[in-house]
Length: 202
Image (cartoon, rainbow, N blue to C red; front, side):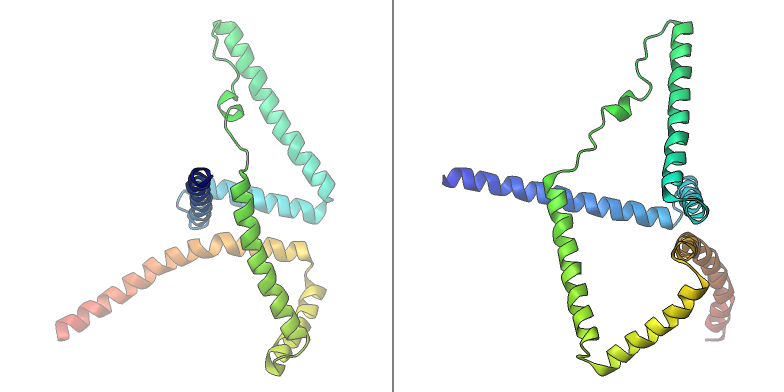
């Protein structure tokens, strides 16, 4: 019994470590995407996200999802038929063109779900505690700050709807790191001559 318990503990630790490493990899990939480390991928994601949000602003969600799935099916079916014709003409046996994607394991482990649920529970408990503290006026200043923010949000909601705010957030989310990186180079170029002059004077 002790051996089975001790043997199961390393397995749970290993799966937990794998889940945490997977989350770190996803976070790192998201940061690299936002910071335009790979401009082509970032441009595609930014364009698609902006297109989806603009489509949701003009069409219904059902229509947007239907159009997206139809577009995806048109691309995949056309590519599948094209590869099948090429294989028939060349008499080759390359197999299914999407075989590598079909064989890839995309299942989510129970440890990953448990880890995400634990993290979500921590944030949910913090949010519940803060909401109770602010609404029940534990601190008068903080509650007045919340009231001021909500008052400003009423005017924001009268000007913009939720989808418009998401579109603006998407644009800011993807363009701010790029603008900052370009401006950072210019700032460093402006500061370098001044630093050189100060070193010469000293």
